[in-house]
Amino acid sequence: MLTALVTGGTSGLGAAFARSLARKGFNLILVARNEDRLREVADELAGEHCIHVEIMAADLSDREHVERVAQRLADTTRPVDLLVNNAGFSVGTPFLTDDFSPHDVGVDVMCRTVAVLSGAAGRSMTERGTGWIVNIASIAGCVTMGEYSAIKAYVTSMTESLAVELHGTGVRATAVLPGWVRTEFHSRAGIAGSSIPNFMWLDADSVADEALADVARGKVLSIPTLRYKAVYTTLHHLPRPAVRWISRQVSGARKREKKA
Image (cartoon, rainbow, N blue to C red; front, side, top):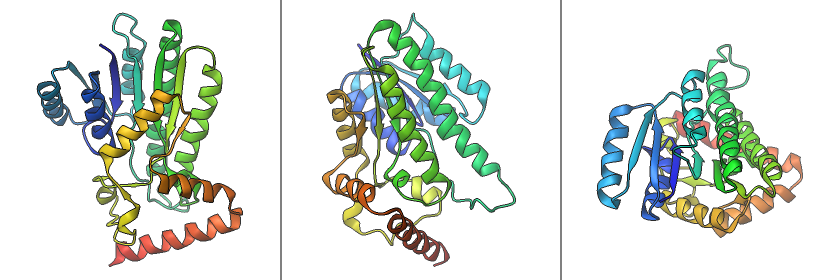
């Protein structure tokens, strides 16, 4: 049986990837901060799908914890066949803030950790000549809406660069760029989402299933649903001033939503 490691695998899109992989018969390694929640999710998945689920309680803003996860990915006696770098959160703090710590944590968790774990997995997988690395980016990386957009643009570019580096090794790298997904991600960030039309919201399980189908096809960029493929194509062909104008409009709607 194949084994997949999923960061942020107890909630939101990470949990959806864990469920989808479990349905496909993968054994799982779930990484998250809350050990009690990890045990609860692990018991549910193991019982329902008759698979083995290992848990690792780790804070991915802590470099020692990240190194522990990297060592697990490098363990040749218990190989990991598929990595999903999903752990993340919204960084709503402006660049001009006095307290820059939210930016530091965001970059550590969603840039540095993604690169470190991708590298650890890539080295181990290359030795075996097979494996998949899946990094969760976002359509937000195509616009200009603060630190989160900048981080997700990095994840997309880093994954494409990794795919180039891995060419010919048998190991594949895929960046997944979902749009608005119905999870607790937005409520945690204080975003109600009422300004977003219903048809733009995606189901987390459907996103995970479509993304993993793209991974199996060897796609480097996975953009779930035709509507967001159209959004992605449009944003990449618009003049940059137009993209910045759109970003201002969406950012303004978010600010009004938070005040309401």
